[in-house]
Length: 330
Image 1 (tube, one colour):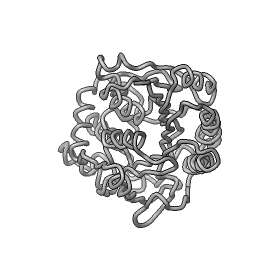
Image 2: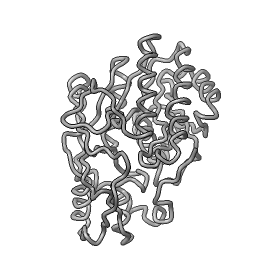
Image 3: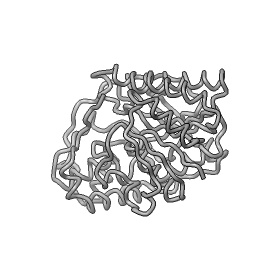
């Protein structure tokens, strides 16, 4: 079996997906702009035996594109999974140009290089439901884009460009858009691990806008399974949503975690202003992947939160000494 290439390997989604590939005996070429993080934040390092099947390269699509393409050619890569992106929504208002350089310009340059590689079987583009903006009702894959932040606009632009590549060149792309992912190994500035950690450390948690926005939270194990199914059996040019049917407000989510950890919600949270351009809700329909690819989510929210609590408790000595907040890198 030829190795697959995963770009953005140090992101939570990328690292967790790689761990699932290694468990299935895939060989992986991993690429990230940053050095490998501490072990608790890299799920693919948790199994020493499978970790031996991974090659890591510290490369950046903004500055090292030719080296990335050289890896694709050297290893005759047939499947490229791209998780790489400037991903923080609120911070994208501060220096939006950084988001457009990575998420749009450099990403399109990558696509233009890949379309000329004959042995590429499929390019799996990890997109985001943020491209739909603030929506009401159920969102299907043919919903029009209405992005409301620089982050969302930068991702929508790359997606639209990819669609033209598919139409013009028959570029073998499939798109995935997952609901809010979570799980063991997630960065500590995300709401679920941050809530758990702050309860354990008795720190105050800022609840933006009172936590009234509604989301679907899906465990990364289910997303990883869906992503591989899409890569192997999806239809080129198609978009696939990955979501659960359970919707919950951020406030109710935090209340659930507090209840599971026997902690007082009002002692934990302080209400702050809402983030600029925050989408109130988006409810993704995942009927397409369920019907066409026979995928179903299996990890309940309660089980997934419980697993994440245990991961943080088991690694608290290392995690409490890391950065809790997002640090921007150009």
